[in-house]
Structures are given as structure tokens and as C-alpha cells.
Amino acid sequence: MASPSTLIISPQNLSSTSSSLFYYSPKFLTFPTKKLSSLSLTNTTAKPRPLSVSASRSLQALIFDCDGVILESEHLHRQAYNDAFAHFNVRCPPSSQPLNWDLQFYDVLQNLIGGGKPKMRWYFKEHGWPSSTIFETPPESDEERAKLIDTLQDWKTERYKEIIKSGTVETRPGVLRLMDEAKAAGKMLAVCSAATKSSVVLCLENLIGMERFKGLDCFLTGDDVKEKKPDPLSDSCQEIRRVRKRLLGGRG
Picture 1 (cartoon, rainbow, N blue to C red):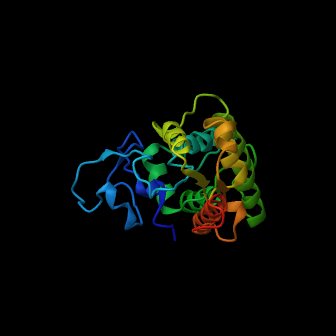
Picture 2 (picture 1 turned 180 degrees about the vertical axis):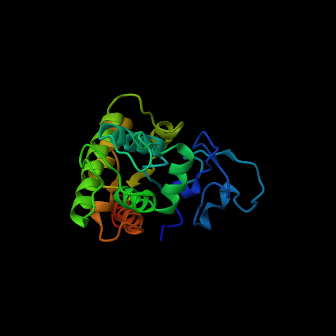
Picture 3 (picture 1 turned 120 degrees about the horizontal axis):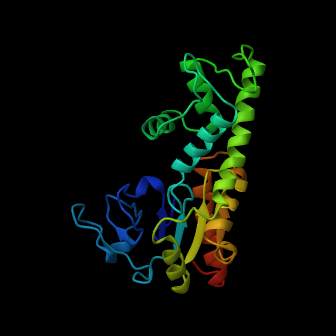
């Protein structure tokens, strides 16, 4: 559980139509607190207002998720999957064209299944196992099907890394400014994500820069915990409290 002075910024707490992280509303962000009364969060119909990280003395830490918060990434993952399908000429019967997941279908698939390999396995079970340059005819054995999915996922992952490193991907509007203002105001910063460490490190190094990355007070990923969710968040809150206590000389 986050402390009353910790602001957790996650995809579930952000408005899909908001273009900036500098606005808050009970409909957009969850503040698990009684001490943040100065932010006037009691009126659930109030219009979003600017949030200054230096405005509240009780706000001591901000915890960012990565995918969906620091960057909008789902369209990049979809592009990487479609590039993989085209590269290996993945064709599901009866189509003679490479598989291509459109935006609307991918959104449904992501919310229904999630996870890279489970998504493909579910799709192929529902729509028929494909032919490809990996297997000229649709794989029939569990071993062949596992090899197909592993090969596609590995190629997709490398393609996603190429996209992130291309210089064309940017953080969501307001993220870097929020981080800088929070740091300047003496707030602690953390990034926690259920994604793999290599993926998150790649994103942070390329998008927020090494200086901000090294300046984080806490950094946890799905590789650092036993359970993907909610362990990264829970552990990061505990680490923030330990850092704060150390900085305050053992108090609080």
C-alpha cells in the first residue's frame, strides 16, 4: 500500500484523452491519502486543475509506471508484431496475405489476453495455425507450435527495441518536465513496471536520458519480484520509505 504522501502514476489512473500529466482529477488519478487535502480532491465533478509537485509539502514521492505513462507504447508493440508477421510471411487460412492486426482488433486482443506469446497462441488457436517461412505448412505438434511462437516473439522483441532506439519515439507530453520539477522540489522519484528489466532499461535510457535514469531513488521491474503484479509497486513504496528514512537520519 502506498503511503499518504506518495503519488502513483499508472495507466489505469490516467485519462486516455488527457495530453498532459500536469492535470489531476479524481477521475484521472488516484491519490490514496487523507493528508493531500490541500489538493481539494473531495469534489469528483470538479474540472481538472494544474498540479504543482512543489505545491504540497506532504507529497514526498512520485512513482511512475513505464508503458502507458512515460510513453504510449501499445501502437509500437502492434507495429513490431505486424513487422514480424510480414518478415516471416505469416499467413492464417484462408488468407494469402501476411497477418496484420489492426488498431481496433489489437486493443481488444490486448485487453482480452495480454502478454506477447499468449496473444499469438490464442489467435492461432481461434483463427488457425499459419504457414510461414518458419514452417512451410501449418505446424501440428506442440513442439513446432512453440518454436513458431518463440521465433516470432524473439524477432518482435528485437524489432521493438529498434523502434525505441530509432529516435522517433518520445515521452508523453509533460513527463520530463514533471520529473524535473519534482526533483528540483526535493521529491523522490521511482519507476516501477511489471515489464522485463531489459525492456524498461532500454526505454528509460533512450527516452528520459541517463542522467534522469541514474537519478531515480528507486527502480523496480517484473524481473525483480516473485509476482509481476502488484509486487513491483508494493516493493517500490517500501524502498521509497527506506530512502526517505535514511535521508531524514532515521526519522519517519
